[in-house]
Image (cartoon, rainbow, N blue to C red; front, top):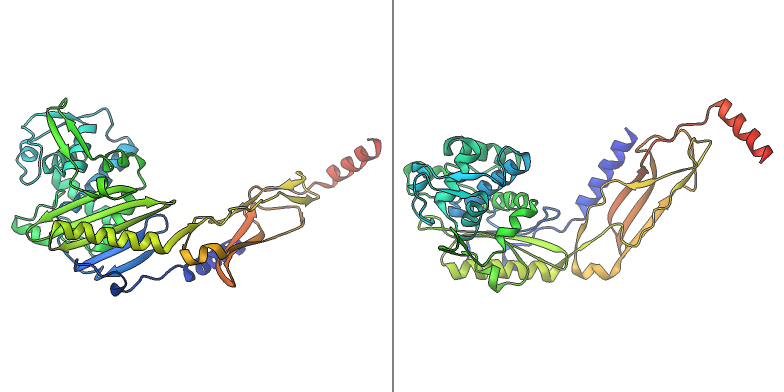
Length: 380
């Protein structure tokens, strides 16, 4: 119970000092709906109508790619698989690489085609490969959205095509897109594709050019996905990393392709200019704590919840760390037992207070062990 209360206190203090989202006027943009999120912490730095439900177009494929990456990690599909195009997949309209029914491509080429060229036929083929049918896959998409807390999202297909009547229910929000984008970025393998500018498939016979122009023209871009239909407008989930901080900028419903990239760059520039990450343990040496009457002479100290802290850049120079640690502790020591506190501050403001706990249990010496140790000390 004591450890639980300590953890709750830590979370409360950390959350209470997180930066709050800037108002829409802080970064004037064209898009009617947008958000800027820190990828490491999930902190929202900026939002504009971020919970307004809108059509996402091919930004939908962020979820499609997430489920494929998770299936690869789980081993239910493999990197060495050949993916076969069904008639339904080959018949998809919009952006495509013109798969023929029965054509097979490697997992690598299918993923590359979806990420770089937003190929709807390849997205459908991957969906069928994972779940057996696009309908079953869409069920998985909606289930995963619910798990991620995407409260205002409902998927109808795996591509974002919205020319069918039922696609009018295919809706999401900028906040929800940021949530699934953040989850996708946890899979390092996807970055091999999201950072490609130009490439080929089919042994060089078919060229691919990334629809996300930031990959070439914005320093530090790590992804992620564009989208466009006449109903959805121009959409983008853009991610970039500089100086250790990775940000996700989502814009939905922009009136032109150039405006969506301008908006994303404006959001990313503002974020990089104003925020940074601070490592709670930077420069801190956690020495073992001596144990009195224990079967071990010391116990290792471990922090609970030492994730990077998002701070306003103007605070970075004033960040300090205060360490409070027991000089010694009497056995028995339980694993997870509170041994001290690490306090991270910016000036007088407490940014986080992290419990320091015993990394392992140290039993108390028995009466016989104490006497034996005493006798041995006499004859040494």
